[in-house]
Image (cartoon, rainbow, N blue to C red; front, side):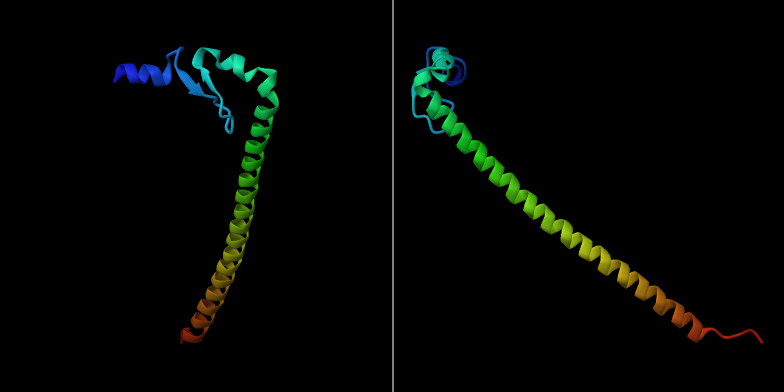
Length: 104
């Protein structure tokens, strides 16, 4: 079990798939930096990173739009709540006036 963990996590001689999403290259862990800086793969790595950044930006924009929608709903609910409280206050005042019996 420890040997397996060593191979998966820290063994400098183990073959790994390039950590850049979309790059299928298999490299020896200790030579990962060399692979990442290799001009032959630079364009592919940059394109892959650009695609990942675009996806993240799109996700963030989608979440921003959802947040704006929810904020609009909260504003509407707050206005409705204020209106209900105002109306409730007016009704209570009218009830007090109707039920008020003057002291004789």
